[in-house]
Length: 397
Image (cartoon, rainbow, N blue to C red):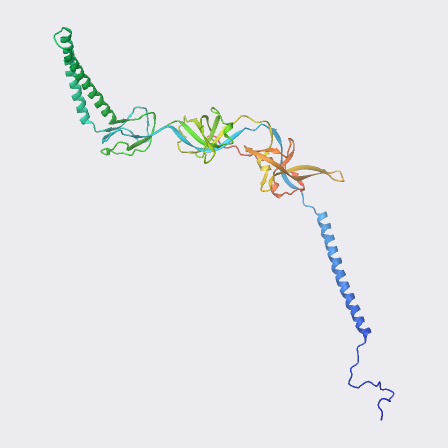
């Protein structure tokens, strides 16, 4: 029987697999592509819709204006001051010592007391010198009598002139011994060389004192020197007689005035600074030598400059700036206040005011308090609270 000739058989081998139809495969590709397109389109539409709604939300929900305090830039003449640091030194100060050696027999002062010039302080043992003084005085008495007698005899031509000369020499020698002994005795009575206040006692009765050993310090506090240095650039502005104000940490808020009395004629080659000395009256005796002092030299006045409160200036590495208040009218006619960051060039800062060299003009309104919450273009509202005094007035003593 011939299998090929059967009407219902294709003639292909029975074990060969049938191929998939290409129409069914293309249909699956189309379906998958449509699904992916719908997904991508849905994501794009969702992102667009979300961004539009977020923008609409923030456009309709603006934050309220920030409340700030406003200050007006003013044109004023500010003091022209030159500030430096220094220290105080006494005009008269010494460590009292003895000129000679000796044993202390009496201490005639109280530590911390005020004394006058010539006040006895310490007595050294001087009994041998007192004996020598009595001896020389006796010799002087005898020499005086011998000299008078020799002069009488010589005047009557009964004695030679050589006898008069010898008597005169003996008398002068006795007086020289008296003067020397009195000087030694005076050295053994140590006195205050000038008016002042004594310090801590550093000797005791019975102590053998060698020449040069410190007994006590003596300081005249009626006047003090204020020594400070300024740079070579600032030295041209200084003149003898200019007013100097002194501030010390011991008395905050209090100022002491004096005058420049000495300007060093040489500039230090290592620091390029010049040393200046001012004399300060100290009638209350409250300033002490060695105190650290902040000195301010009052220089001639400069022309008027624009100033604002010191708190208005924002000092950064990128430059100094302020927030300038501007008015903007909306379409509905309402006026809104905004701020614009404006860079300025700031100068000196004196008594809570900052000098503005460039960037502002008199009458400009700037933010004085509250700029930490601001950025350029922010809406603001003027606070009804007054601007706090800057700086607070320090108490006076």
